[in-house]
Length: 89
Image 1 (cartoon, rainbow, N blue to C red):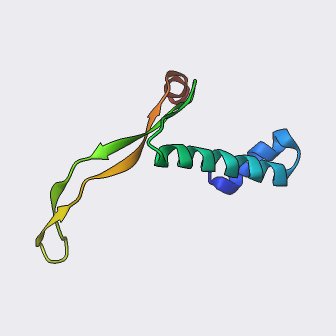
Image 2 (tube, rainbow, N blue to C red):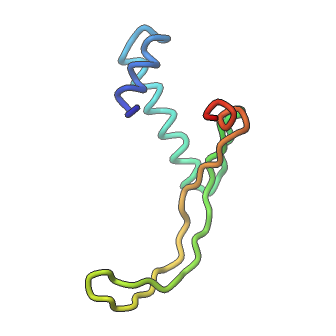
């Protein structure tokens, strides 16, 4: 399922593709803004979106084989909720 498919599915409930697109875009924007501020977004029964710190490490350029330094950074992380885990089994 891609974003267009999700909008179509939401439009079945809202009866308007325009309203569905606004709802999906607003949800994605709200989650993105929360994560960029290092907040956690918990959707009970679905899962939790949060950020995790990835430590600096050494890597290797696959073309040249030369060792490179990869800086530390925050990355988004999703932890599925119990209901989602059970639904996927």
